[in-house]
Length: 387
Image (cartoon, rainbow, N blue to C red; front, side, top):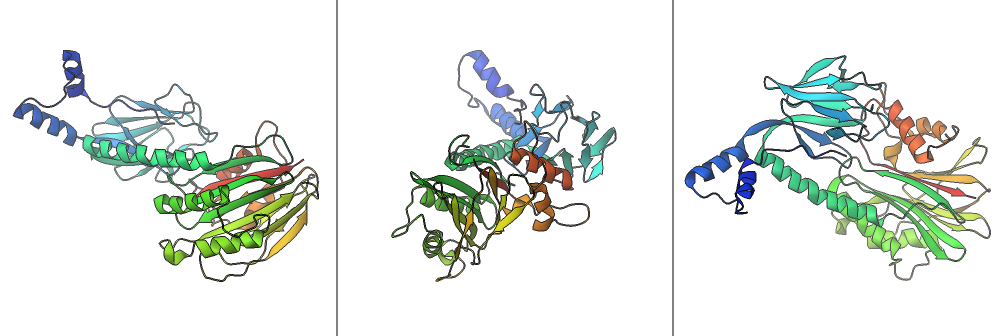
């Protein structure tokens, strides 16, 4: 969460103090003064990536404190960030950042700040896993960016409202994490009862990022949530993928396509029937955490070609095993040496659980620790446990 940093509202405050409530300029001089104030140039940090992407933070000579502590100016609630991490201020027209002895460091364009450093305009300041670009702009620029930020925030909250709540009791138990790389991403997932003894589980990954990908993702998600596929048995993964492929051909949706993993779990038989559309496997991890079995079938992504054929397979589900469904943003991370592949991520699935830490949080922390910077793609992870 980023706290709003007060900006100069002197004209509005003066008008309210006078009791008139009318903030319109009353003379040419006031009009010019208002325009001058709006065009006044200042220094800002602009958040990059994640739910805060696009947020502008005004900087001044008064130091801005940042860290996990909820009483700071810049609240960065993440395990990678220290309680009191940094101070940022403007000195002689230059942005200065001071690291306050943080554990995971503060970086300017990937150079670690030992004590204090300047942040040139255009440079990227990284605090733990959060990144900000230093920009020079006017209050008018800030207000325009804030309007866009709040509009996108409403859209992001709408996407979140469509995701199902975690389940802690019953024949399946779920935990998930959804962190778009930008304000809006193209990932989605879900699960719901089909009847008294079957439920569906799925994850989709739309190509690209941003508004277009999010709109496509929401369209698919709503079709699945409402089971709005004509002449389709939702207990049959092949029928579901074929119907989605017929409905969402990319030439009718601005060349958007998506990968998908879809499964149906029969609680009485403890049997999972599943099919894939260009998506990497889901992984069934044994209760003793010694094996991770990839569950995958052949098939092109949804929307790429008409008449695509899909195949289904089945897996017996041992008690206390867990199914991990995730987007490629979970494992396609950049390290100092290279970009990870799926095989680099899989050993993390077999590592012991941590008391008091959810599986999603454990894996997110492990991926963050292995990466050399902020995650570049959406991080979407669904863990389903079968008691």
